[in-house]
Image (cartoon, rainbow, N blue to C red):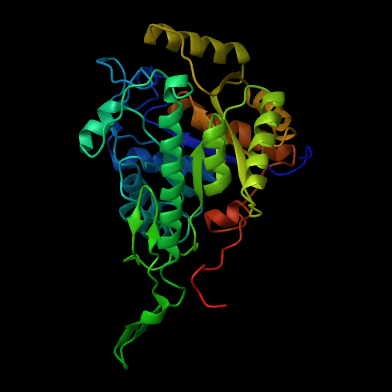
Length: 397
């Protein structure tokens, strides 16, 4: 990617921000966290910055300071609203920005999620997406009682290899079922002719008849094909098995390189997996970064230190943590883009502070360098990403 190639930019929304002590900042609005207005304000700010999309975090258990186990802490944000429902509430109050809720696919049914995201695509007039996530937490499996998941120490530990492979293979099948259900109604299947009494053309509804080790789904969906045809699917990936999921099943892979060399290596591995499955459709690879942004770099570092002190421990992340100015962040994004990344998903450390710093500081800096849009030139999420509307797999040629 050349230094002048336009970048794609997204923001990950989670609670009051990605730092666990973010809720204690004066700008955090913790009392509003479970209100529709809070989320509408955040997404409206992201749209003001012309971002491609926002992702909305979700889970099937309370947040935890332990990656795979629950905790008993009461000094950090706990509890969430449903991400798909947040997106559906926000959609009518925004016009351009993509809305990508997270769904834990390990314990939810693909039929239900397919019609929920298809509905979101209608509510938003073509701006829906889906971020799929797996869960290896035993406590979350216990909420449903359908399967037992043995505790592992880490996703990349030797004892977890078989489980992680199974979970990501299941996620790939899950996405395939969802995509087939989105196609199970052809475009134009709804006739809606009151004079003849014909509402649908039954020949344009199709059984998907998916049979696999994890799912058996006949179809068709009960929701007509989404406006985008196929809302973009995304996933976060850290190693070979999830890279295969990204290459096989998604439109955007979120990765966590810490420098340009690592970015180049990750992109190469994902492209190799893409070639291995014979995929020739576009696939974006976005880099994730946690950001503390201030006009003075020392202020950003001091703010991080102050939040760490409030949390009682240094904040750590799977993604690179950047503390500095919007101009310095722009330098880093261009350096990483030159290594093959096509966009970035930024995780604001404190949403009330760092989200406006992205939209009002970073975005103008990137615009001045000629690498970010000055206006939306599409009105769908696929359009923002440069993805064509795909043909329906079941429609007759």
